[in-house]
Length: 118
Length: 173
Image 1 (cartoon, each protein chain N blue to C red):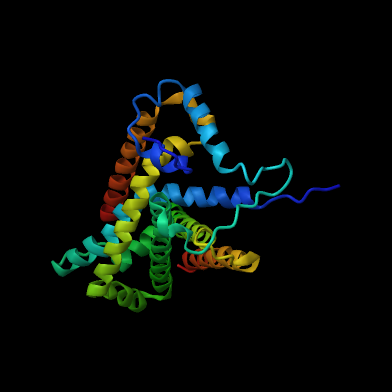
Image 2: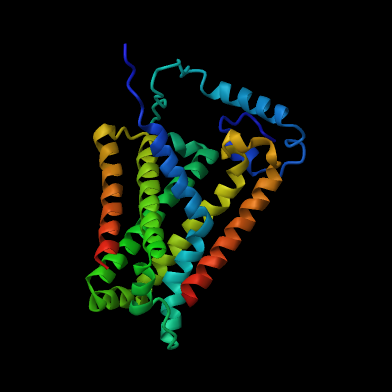
């Protein structure tokens, strides 16, 4: 009798990787892109402008880093979002579960396409 | 101090541990007894898929620890929205300078400052709780290398160093 393999471990692994990445750099990154960059621009200091970001993302490391960051954060959020529904007592079902992960994966694919086009 | 709580991750995870780190055997024994009281109704049978026990709607209303846990879970939604916003910026960058300037200009709206402040608060809460819980969530593979305080200290240092390195890189790259 063959036993069906669970797809939970890799999903939890990705979730955990996203959580780790978020814990290490997300607060600093959010404050930087959301507050420091626009406030600096008001004072005439250009940070993360089109040319420098374009150059940064054309390097393999920069492109890989942004794709990994976006994909892992989206997967982390999708996984937690689905489990949050369960913890609130809402039985969302397998279709919603697949939808959560599919949406996150679609975001990751979109990010990959974007850096390939650059 | 630990009380009759059913969630070992919240209380024992946040306490600065003097005694708990005395020996790995005592902590793991303590943990396993706590866990066994919580999951005794859903006895995991080897080979069967894990099915979390269903929760009632509103079950969280009277449970402080559970509310904190839900807040921690909910922070991930703001992190996800921030990732989506980064994705929009990346797509704008791929489309061209005009689209990217539109995305950049959107950051000057007061709503953007507010949204980023909320996302920052969520990320900070996620980071602080993540570090506090680290001794419990650490894979057993790395178990005995450091005590609880040591793991947390290492995580704080790692978080600080990687954040500063990232910001310096983004500013001068």
